[in-house]
Image 1 (cartoon, rainbow, N blue to C red):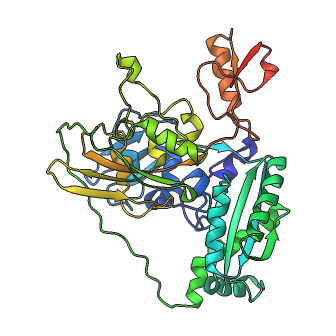
Image 2 (image 1 turned 90 degrees about the vertical axis):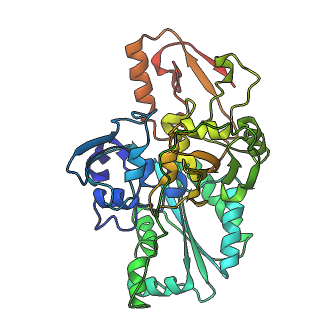
Image 3 (image 1 turned 45 degrees about the vertical axis):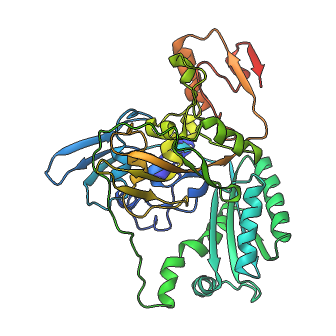
Length: 426
């Protein structure tokens, strides 16, 4: 798919290690992750609609033809993705394309211990740098892959971190220098930085061949699955406002777990102290319903899948929810998902629960992925455009690869070539 749209300056961002031999249908059935999942998400974050055949033989269409096309419906698309063909046979897929990054470079960072490599991960994310790709290889895998690629690594190296950075050339060059400096402060023993696309592809081969290379170490490899199950339909309504509080917050891991009744403002303030935020920008609707003093809660935001104007690029709550806990209609407690970004095993219950308006279950807590907050934001407002020109301008802005706008709402502009006077606000 990426090759088919490459001439348009677009790409399909998920790139699982098996992409050389796998199909898009297989990737959707397995909800494959890939090296870019930390920044861009897994397969389910890029699929907007499906056509599938049920065991009854009925053909169904799930989701929509664009981002947000199936809002206010159960996220059955998210439930089918990763179900391995057990719920339905997928026959057609509608995906979201994004502009190709202008520049991408990868750093292969070798460390003397697994502990040093782990500390470096936290240090880099703690500085607000989210790599486009992030992978870890230990010594056993290094030896297996090196023999296949004919590479030689220092015997001092016990672990390698692969970190890809993308964006404009100036941005990437600056981040490469910053990441390298952080790595040196955390026990760096060996460095290799790509300068060309060929070198970048070669370095990534060290990770993408890892699974196959394990056959040189062990004849049999087992990949386990968690027990699979889900809640039944529930139609009870409960007041969850008393169930409030933050169970844990790990800034360096970009993860927070909150109880359903926790006010959005509380979470926003806690994240701001660490210069982080919820990228989907939860809206505050209480005032619109005549109760400005009411607290919008995290459980309500997730149950309704409510996102602000950043959704076009930052996604919605469904793209940030990693795990859920709740109570089903029979009073049974259950858990779904986890606390890691690349959690693609089993049915994606968190996505099915997100946006279900409490009909399927009463959520008691949610685990969310957070992001570093941008250090500075500028909004340019353009007035005087008709509907047709405004829509054309918004579509044009989405194809700015160097710095696509984080928010598109109303008549917002990132470039002056439209010929209209722009007013600036912070």
